[in-house]
Image (tube, one colour):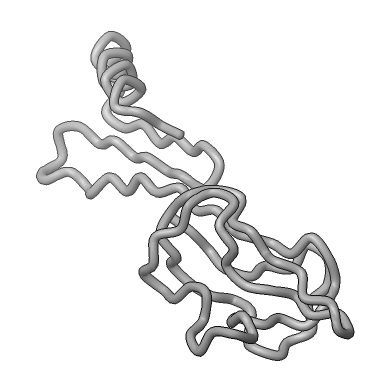
Length: 124
């Protein structure tokens, strides 16, 4: 993840070496710095985490005793929180968040058969 200190260091190095543009990628994060050409482009710093299955089964977004899905887009989830279930026969296995964040999208549809490592939802 690119921090504010990293940005300060990049700007200092650009000044020292006379650079007008710098484009840096780290994972899914991209920062582009352009100096001296009108208004700067917005800097987008986002970290996206995709929660994936750790087994094979049918996606179940709700617990059988609850009426609402475990999570919805916009919800904040904590690491290890249950975000859904995989059903395999009579067994219901929890799907747990591998990180904390806000749900930005849900990839799996209720009743969809998911393989090992299938994306379930995204966090930012």
